[in-house]
Length: 115
Length: 110
Image 1 (cartoon, rainbow over the protein chains, first blue to last red):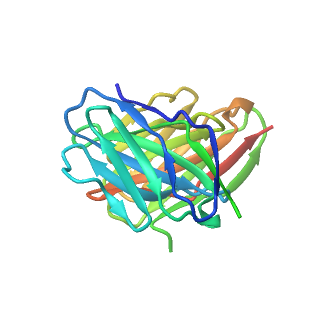
Image 2: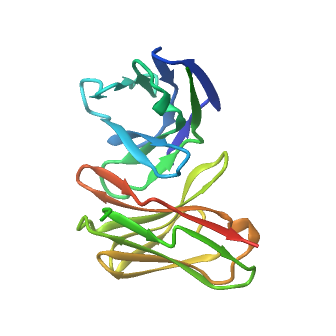
């Protein structure tokens, strides 16, 4: 079984500051992927970034980076230079890379950017 | 057009009614999924399908059924809707480079 834990129900961050959203995971699969999604108030799920368990380098996508610490089973999302449009729910998810590939989601973190 | 289209976007239905939520995709992906989102609980998997002949239950399938009419279409049915099925429902597909979600269907059962 796979599990995602997001311990920050809500966060308030000043605009232009960097923010780290925490995610820890548990899995017995040797090969897996970690995903971060953004959900604005309109409700859609927007893919942000992906990290494979065998990737040697941390993933980056524009202002988003993933701080992947495999031994600690953590996959924190870092948003640099936050913007008002970053205010949203953020979900971490884990899935197997092969076979049964369904995603398991955490409960999310609500991020609010303060002007 | 969106890669994954869900209809309807919003629906209010009465307890005991049968309702179908539809999902179609233009990605050409074999793998399709239905998730449910409740406040504070994240997304939970209802059903998934790896091709038209391969349908599998997820963690919360009770009270739901699905139909994979074609590679591109995956429908979710509530045979007899109840108020605790009020939620936001997402359809998703998976390809080689990750998952694509539809915009969601907000269902209210009164």
